[in-house]
Length: 105
Image (cartoon, rainbow, N blue to C red; front, side, top):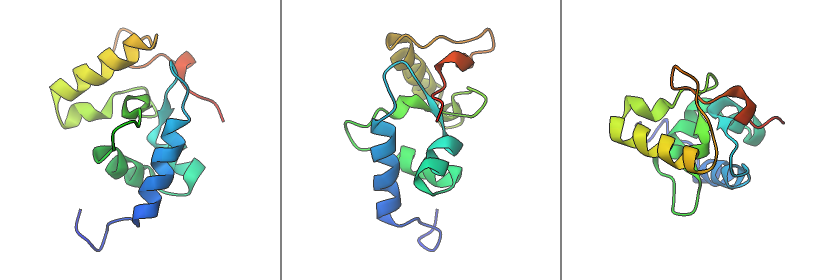
């Protein structure tokens, strides 16, 4: 991302605050997080790339339940899945988060 495209730092802070509110064992999509704080799903993705300590980044997934971090690293995908499974999140046969774990509202 070049500096002209970079969201304002307070946008990232809003994303992090919202993600902190996702309950254990639940997930939210990039788009849902973005809609809740008034930014795009892409901005949420940028924010997740720079997540500070204490933000449960693993709880943000693609709207289809796919672990988008897999595009960056198979290791990070395995870590995200492991963290989610430790919270009780289950996956379907295609490796996607089961819909029952998506936070509504």
